Image 1 (cartoon, helix red, strand yellow):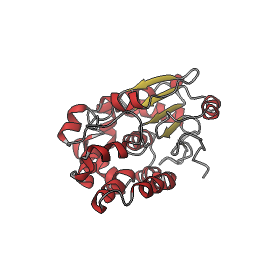
Image 2: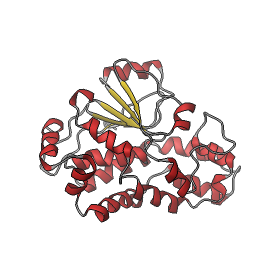
Image 3: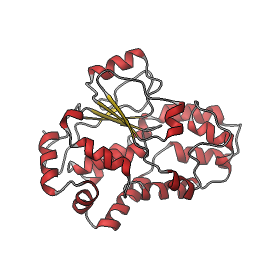
Length: 268
């Protein structure tokens, strides 16, 4: 898969270039990358990041996640972290920022399993609520979209834990701002089910037989992506603002003129 960049210590590292915008141009390669967590990157992977000319690493994770699995330092790359899920939002969704009884390290799903959280929560309901809230008034995406407008900060690598939910919404916003149509944005989002398939199956196989079937189904829901999840985020934008043009202008200062300048810089 040309879009997927093989890394020894990451499973979902992708170049967002090559997608065609509504006006027929394509997003330039080498400007925007998305990934799952980076803490396991090998020395060879770090050499690869330098070769890719990564100048900014943007992390959506919270303090607990980042403390347990910190980002590596990469030569000439700024590390910026702004949590995409605020503590108040986590509490309202009954989703712990730090799983009770959990330890730093290990996969988040396993930590949630140990805490007992996966026994009671409703995965689909929680994910739909999460996605609906992510794109509105979010300081993390405001910072991301400010960075996108700074050519000296690109190539920009943005990531969370699995590189699918918080990163998925961030990737959607970047592509939509560049005029990439919704159906293509959805293709990029759903690609995670391909890139993470082997990793997720291995994790579920390891836990099968140790947990109840209902818990296993909740885990599958958390590990994968569904069109309905991203649609919840996009619908939230349209319900709140009516049109993407208004949303980008009011949320991020990306007026029509600013977006045209951004497109001219990032499309070819």
